[in-house]
Image (cartoon, rainbow, N blue to C red):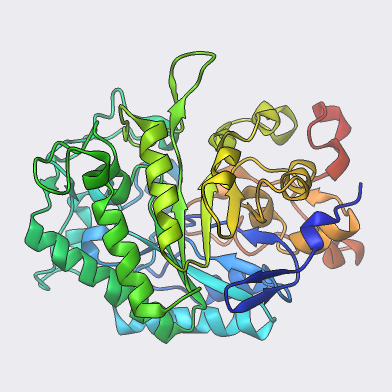
Length: 427
């Protein structure tokens, strides 16, 4: 199996990429417990996945205490602890600088994904020593006082805990929120990130403004599609103004109605809307007014979260978001459920310019090289995705370690067999 399209060079804003294999942003909950900053293990994790002329996108990095969730919805985090990083303090900036230096030392680029979780973040962060006594605004907040309902809105993230009714952001709050994004972007620049990415997907704050299933506002941030997208474009404009052309990316997860079932696909944390096609057409087309680095789109087939790779039928689903190729004129990155063959096809056919791999890049720190030479891939261990342990974080071997006779707890799968029955894999 030859992968040619994935290894054609690409110009991304002011940067040159030697290949089109991107590290997708993935929450790992390995931040330092005291500072909510990257640890020494985090530095190693990103350095392991850096390659000459490659692009990495950081895990979701929170712009303020108000933006920061405590991921105790995951059993591993409940059992072992685990924290997500921020970028609002000098300590966090300094620790992210160590990550950026390590990535740049291997000739790669790195984008900082900026997130405000909105109503998904709950009040527990107010008990953290970094936050107590600071008078920082605390979660949950949202477009409207519309709470999560864990009984019917568990979604892909298995939410199973009571959720506090969020405070609807006032106009004054929104002005402060945009300043929080500016501050985070400045801090990311100080840390050495090459770009920032606005996380406007997966049911977090921006989608809570997008979606009229949540947004019940009657001011100029609610009602019409144009009003519900206003905050999104205000933040994009602020980030571009702060960092300049070619240094801001955006993440979206367009929802829609599955014509075969009549049900919504790709909804997260109860973020539903009555007009998904019109909403996301407007949001995507409007991004052409900004000199962005890229737009990343999550494909709905990102699901199958509890299925072994060999049994994952989601990889065979069509690319539902390829229609946005005609709407967006800049760099388009696809993420969600890609395997080597489908990634190659998506780029070769022009649907996407770059492909972001999550689970497979997590498990294969040298993924671009393995794709290039056809080496078998480590199979990811889902039980170690979250929590504060080093297992499943920095212990995945690269192919040189395996060829040198190094021991590994992870089984291998041939790339050509990834969509075949389980007995096609090998150790």
